[in-house]
Length: 348
Image (cartoon, rainbow, N blue to C red; front, side):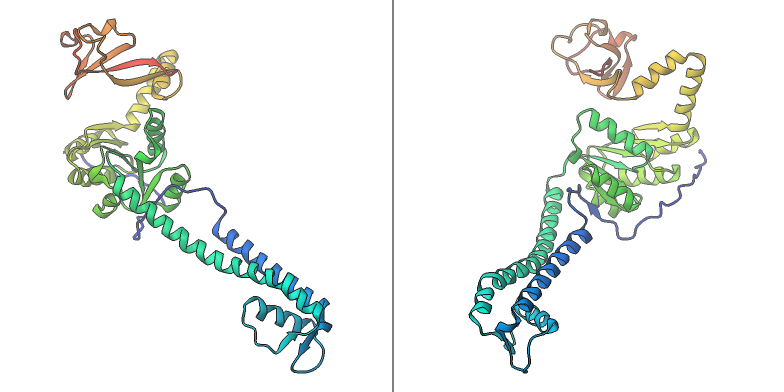
């Protein structure tokens, strides 16, 4: 049996309080929103204080003496907060008219600012809970991407380029800042250790159609694949490892396809060294959305009964059931309507 090699992945300690992070909506930071409302409320209070102070001769203080600036601030505070102790009252016609036309609207504005902030916080929490419950009840046949590093992000970009919707992708990673980054790009994220069953349950993995296993370490990839396959026997599991000798362990753990990142990069380097043009073509094929793309698609009715060479696209393999047949093999000489073909076509 192959020896499982361990790599290093600094900063990937699992979070104990794993949670679901829905796609972020554009809004100002919460601290800025609260700060701006506090400043607005303070401005209303200051404006009311100045108005009362300028008309201080029209007010009566039961404690005796005239109103100074502190008394004006006190009256503005108890008035805007609707406390109203009655120790300072407007008695002149001008002061009472000012209370009706100016201070009362300011009082309403002050209350709207304070109450509105509270209501918005409660509404946002309710909205987030509603979105989370709705997502849990509708997520089906989605793709779970475990690990949102270089490999995971590239896999997501390719999926999006092939037409997969953002709401059909769930990203799992132990680092909260990584999940928040994914959320900013419109993806649903789950913070947590993907080797744990409860984390994958949060990602609704039992109902997923595809699972991409792309952590930083090979031993983590094996454990994640084992856990994922235990929760979902039918999903297509594609896993990435760094070392070739760990690939058999991934297949034994239940991965349908295993991609070795280090050896694949090495082969591409060697090919590019011997034939730079061939290396450029391979790099083009691996980069989705530009130049030439490798695509799997169903056989059309017009293509059924004909050979791969008769297809409009360049056919390199035929998928029949669970078998992949090279286009040069006799079995692939006649395409069937139930077949799928792997073709090279222009990205346009």
